[in-house]
Image 1: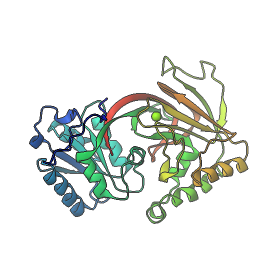
Image 2: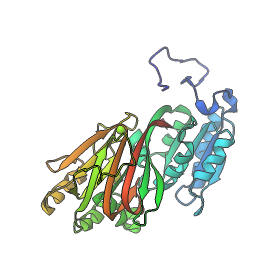
Image 3: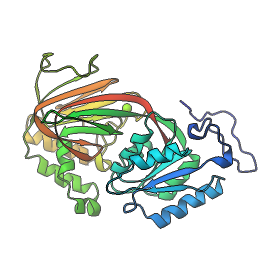
Image 4: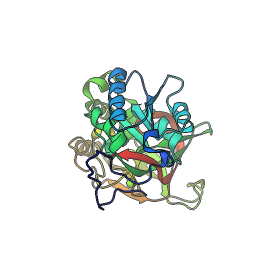
Length: 343
Ligand SMILES: [Mg+2]
């Protein structure tokens, strides 16, 4: 993992950027050969301003002119990012909401081309976890040149549907069922725009009326495809089960502050409050930005995988996107498999 060192700094008079070691995407490229690919969601990004900001950073730092890809309703970012990668981009920057970031990241996982997240929209979970400015996009754009590489852990999730079909999803920050998924499913899009995270609270209050979910769960199994029922894993009743790589929750509500996106550990937060009152208390702690752990909350720390079975089917969310009903989730941690730029 390349980390900036505290060795001698290059404070030369010629404004030469400090060499931060390998820029994997451009390992063999000379300084003036580097170029940025920007994959942008045109509705969520202020394109005119974004083009101006990117042009300024590239010009000032001697990069070649940036190349641009816009997402569409059909192609949400993965194809564009793959094209940019194949064209040899030194950095792939993404501007859009969490769905766009996830699609672009998917194309870059396992490669050494760094991802730069230029926040747009309400979520941007990974950007927040990395400390990328979400209030100043100009600051975020500067990171393209000045950012350091972090090898971020991602989660590969295989979802089983009630009809037995399977789908694979990439999660950069967190996925889950129960309260957290109901909250996401119930969020009013208009309200999300106007009220930001408050929309999630209102939605959460609605989700309180839902029933508990019967699940079986296990972690760090040798065989991720094993049936938990057949393996004799005990059943539990939960309100919410959330698997995260780092300590950020939707809308900036914090959970597990000490957990880092690159520490090789994912946390599973299992909330099983015995009463509605317990759940209200928990939600209150979330909203008041305290740690959500309490007497009815269990936290697992896993380095390999987490498997959850919920035979009756329940709605799931991945990085804040509702992905429909599932009966089983297999989550495998891929440590350090995405290179992301961070301040
Ligand atoms: Mg972690």
